Picture 1: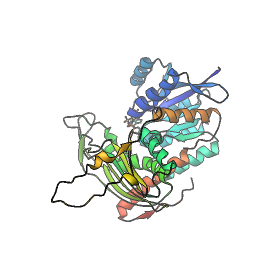
Picture 2: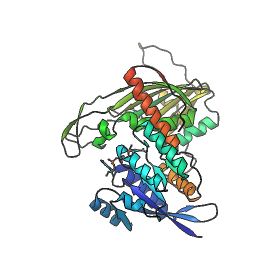
Picture 3: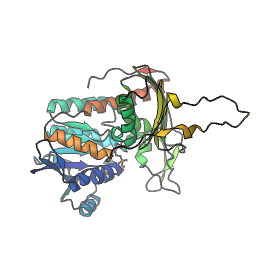
Picture 4: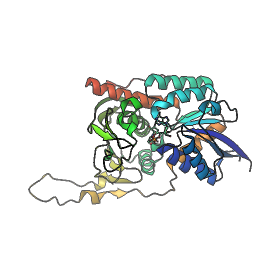
Length: 383
Ligand SMILES: NC(=O)c1ccc[n+]([C@@H]2O[C@H](COP(=O)([O-])OP(=O)(O)OC[C@H]3O[C@@H](n4cnc5c(N)ncnc54)[C@H](O)[C@@H]3O)[C@@H](O)[C@H]2O)c1
């Protein structure tokens, strides 16, 4: 078996996503398994080059994992013709300019979402990438969650009949940072640093909901900043300038409606941090990160409203978990493998920067809807 090294400049690798999901759980894990096999039998073998701002932290990560190369100069690494792919997991505001440089340098690019912090920027990136003829891709990890894979299986098998509605519930309590440290970085709560739950989560909701239920047609959204003051990584108090919750109604072209709640100020009373409750004429399902429970029309109980008596029906007991029936790999890693295959073969990638731009569009429309207090059509995007 021949082996082909693919050199990947990884920017933002000291961050939560860059380090854990993309470096350790994806690229290092792909190296451990011997690479990614192409159809012709060649194994693509990732060689990460760490890029960032803090030399000491990069050196530590490189040493910990036996990685030979790291640099604090993006320009140097991009001018190296031996670098094949540029990957970006930096804070959102730093992304657009770095991606633009990488595209201009002729590298294939793969990036975390949102692809940019404005729709204009996202569309320009998509166009530049297309003109450059490179392979470009955006992380859409939720498509590869076990619970979502099970839900997609149900849809393909016609389990739901006609899908009527979707209730998406996402969120958990993010500690304010006084006393207990916050479990999310403070830039998430600062508008000028690319923060806000709408910009963070609506790109996910866009690709996830359209993949499962088809094109979106319109939305109404209302966002809020429930917790006005938080404490940062240094323990300093700051004013929250970004939204930390959003409540939206999304309409699909099919006629189905999704109620989508996203919040970092909610205490979890569900099985998983993300849940999609889908009701159809023939059956219903509740899918999360890993689980997916179903109830078919034929086993649907008949509730009768009577607050005077204890309800005799144990509703939750009447759902059945879809069995795993297959091995599920880490979703970030699965998508990396697909991207590396496409880049190595010079093929376009299905989840590209134009798709990423649609996610930013939905976030912008949600912000606009909230600001103007009205329902907004989702126009086709020519990216
Ligand atoms: N796909 C997902 O599920 C998912 C989940 C969380 C975050 N994300 C995205 O990943 C990106 C990184 O998020 P994170 O949670 O890892 O953030 P983080 O704060 O943990 O990491 C940010 C990284 O960017 C670097 N950086 C570059 N310029 C910076 C600047 N000016 N200020 C601060 N840091 C700077 C930091 O050094 C660090 O390596 C974001 O764009 C976010 O939207 C995606």
